[in-house]
Length: 165
Figure (cartoon, rainbow, N blue to C red):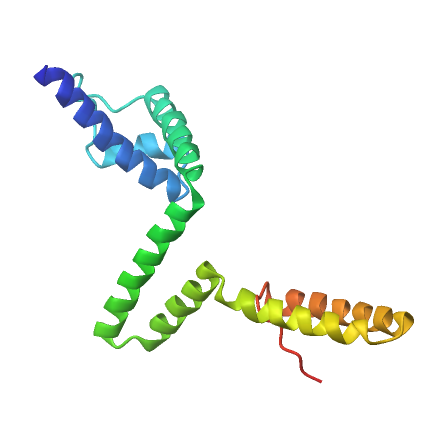
């Protein structure tokens, strides 16, 4: 039993390094060399791990990543929200106000807090358009749509659209 547990432990540790290397952009060939350079070798043979072993690890890791991705999105949001809380706490201690503001902005996006603002704007616009003659409302909608598209191209995707003249 001890040998089996030891082999499993070795595999888990190797896959942790393989995962980290892959997520940093290394190819499987690069990972084989990286492991050898780090002295991470097959404990039975003392030889570097083969490309076949690393590719098998990568297939297993990719499947695990896909399975984890399919976990309920609310679980992911809860974890990210908790991590943002940790980032903010550390930033407060360090006096890093820019980091605090970025974390707050990410929380707003994660929780969809700006969606209520956007929805209110859409409802108000719908009410305004309802009171106008159809041809004028149609022209205004086209102009607004073009402005929104232009703004998204310039600034990137935003949940709140600034309405400036």
